[in-house]
Image (tube, rainbow, N blue to C red):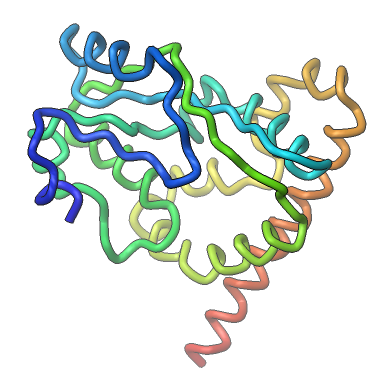
Amino acid sequence: MLGRLAKGEFILSIDSDMELTPNVVAECVAKVESGFDAVIIPEFSVGEGFWAKCRVLEKECYIGDELIEASRLFKREAFEEVNGYDPELEAGEDWDLNQRIRKAGYRIGRINALIKHHEGGLSLWKTIRKKCQYGKTLEKYKRKHPNEAKQQLRFIRPAFVKNWRKLVRDPIHAFGMLFMKTCEFAAGWLGALAKEDHRL
């Protein structure tokens, strides 16, 4: 749907709670003009309250992590060649498109300018419910990309190990982040089990 509605040479996909910082578009265009077909735009979070600050710390760890970051700007021809986002995926659709772009032989670059993700007043219960829903739908993504999914859906992600110094410098929010990830991981498994029970 997105590709059919877009009229321009490039397609940029962002969520309703995201904000482009001033240099994003210019850097994306320059990256494509230098020979790349898709562009990863790193993301940082802002929000209010303890859990939002835990998410901020988590997102800082993901900057530069090829397992987690996914392309957001595409040359139209590359986007259409791989048929854009998979409408059957309710979770992992950005990872899926990034994998298909890469496997089709297109070049993926990244820029330094950031997308600001507004978390608002994030609550633990809200993120648990969200991950439970994702757990019901991620199986489709895992079937399409089993090797990548094993890495991306780990409980302890390599990004946390790589950025251990960052976590040590903020132990309170690091502990909160790990507790939140534990709850999310459990919620994802519960969602997957609920989906499996429903099929039976």
